[in-house]
Amino acid sequence: MRGTRDLLPDQTPLWNRVEATARAVFARYGFGEIRTPIFEATELFARGVGEETDIVSKEMFTWEDRARAASEKAQSLTLRPESTAGVVRAYIEHKLGETGQLQKLYYIGPQFRRERPQRGRYRQFWQIGAEVIGPQTSGSDSPVRDAEVLEMLASLLDELGIRDWRLELNSVGNAEDRVRYNAALREALEPVKHQMCADNQRRAETNPLRVLDSKDEADQEIINGLPKIADYLGAESAAHFAQVRAALDACGVPYHLNPRLVRGLDYYTRTTFEFTVTTGLGTQNALLGGGRYDGLSEMLGGPKAPGIGFAIGEDRLILTLQAQMEADAAASDGALEEPKMDYYVAPLGVEQNAAALRLAQELRRKGMTVEVGDGGFRVKKSFEAAEKVARAIVLLGEDEVSTGVLTVKSFATGVQAKVERARLFEA
RNA sequence: GCGGCUAUAGUUCAGUGGCAGAACGCCGCUCUGUGGCAGCGGAUGUCGUGGGUUCGAAACCCACUAGCCGCCCCA
Image 1 (cartoon, chains in turn brown, cyan):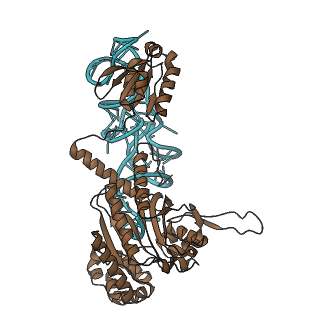
Image 2 (cartoon, protein in one colour):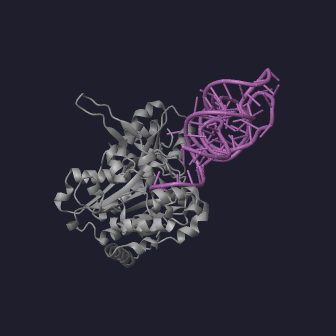
Image 3 (cartoon, helix red, strand yellow):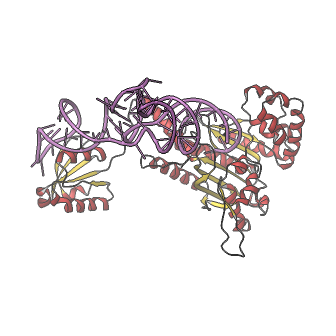
């Protein structure tokens, strides 16, 4: 299917390493895993992500569920295009706010957007994300939370071995700041917008913030002359942002202020951020993105519950790591070695098959990785097969079975030795 | 959703109108309890799918599907 992929066993170890590292890092910061449905009511995304966003207006996989009884109405359902809305729905539904505790939740799972695929962009893609949310009394809107999340991401990327990441940081202000800034943008764009490209002319009308995001080269001069959001932050937003930056400075997390970083989901308020990389992703250079969403819970009919979260594009993280590994292998002239199993047990003759499987059983129960051949194979074939998958071959012929003294040959050293059956289990 | 490029063996690719190819990999033999090297031999296949042009199409044309690159946007 378009935009979907199969991940074969040569790929999945890296995926598992990434996910295990993420789980371990998140646990150190007190996050617990949440698993929410892969589909939700369409309404949730329309209200949470925003009716006018690209995601909701043209990228969702949506269908009408059948009404199963005359009294039941057909419901519009949608494969989740992101997970924050679902997590906040679960927060509301399970009344997690009533605990009074700050909730730190993370998730790993597939997301679905009906876009044209290209490198680093798939219709089913995976996100590793986390949300910090709770009633205000839990400190959920503290700048400490913003900085902690950003510092955690820096630690995670470092631990994964992602090199040359770059943190872009901005504050888009609270709801009131945004109203004033939008008005200022419209006013500034009015006399100059006719000089801009068609896309930007449209955005100037529908969503002036998006003009800031434009990469149209001819329009850059105009865009650079537009009012900066930083000048329109109210005292509260400005103080919050200053504290976030101070905490990042204290932790030694490098960042670049990017006054043009506006994000495409309607729920973002105040802190917004993106981590980008230059390796492996082509023009889709955003590795992860996120921000604060102080009003989302209320938008979804829940209690006031400020929050901040992010989503890592796992596919993009993997592409970056693979590109780095290829670059390293090319630089050191070394081929990428596939991990080998401990033993390949080769029965010599079909009469030894049962004994070979039994030997493998014992070795595996000791925790060793073992492959078993077939007595019908010629010895040459057994060696060839063994050398591909294992570090050593155990020959099991009539003699070995009757005496219990095995013939073991290491492929690394080329040394062949007779080994007591019992001693093999010690290794 | 828009534009460009691409699709031939397991893989990477050559093949611009006249017998479907190379390298690597795979299998067999030389070699029935010792692999890696070498020699010899073998199988690779809906030439993405469907239609059209032509005496003849892998090649030219159209449509579709999928991938890649870019735009939009985002992870």
